[in-house]
Amino acid sequence: MKSACSLPLVLIALSWLGCSRSVEPPRVITSSLDRPLISLIETTRQAVVSAPESALAWGRLGQAFHTTEFVAEAQSCYEHAIQLDSRSPAWPHLMGVLQLQDQHEAAFANLARAADLAGTRTDASRVRLVQALVERGRYDDALKHIHLLLAGDPLHASARLQKGRILFVRGTVSKLAEDFASL
Image: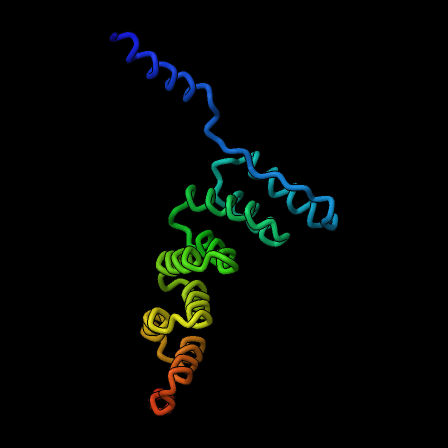
């Protein structure tokens, strides 16, 4: 009985040792693309094959797929880049932008993660998150991020614009006038 229990463990260990830990980057049919785009995909894909543990290589391949509208492939590459470099705001930002098309909640989560990772270095992710939240009528959520932007820069143009849109939609024009009078 003891040997029957150890057999699965031996098989798992052998399969783990025999398998490559690197993941093959996605392939796509590029016949409908212009030659420069084909070259971009081939070059960035080869960079991943050459350096499968490079978040930058995976992220750039994701950008190439994103540019050429291979959405599933881009998402897969961004996921690998995020796994390889969980501290970079670039990959969750790009994943969030990609997901805004049809995966809103996941997009909001990725943009918020990117904004938190970026801190005060850049506000691009938080600005895009606010825009997306306002576009979808999620005003209270947007205001939380607007206040963070305004805390860093009370004259933040995009934050003030989005706040003005929210106040206007809510019919609180008097608050809009007060907000701009405080400048």
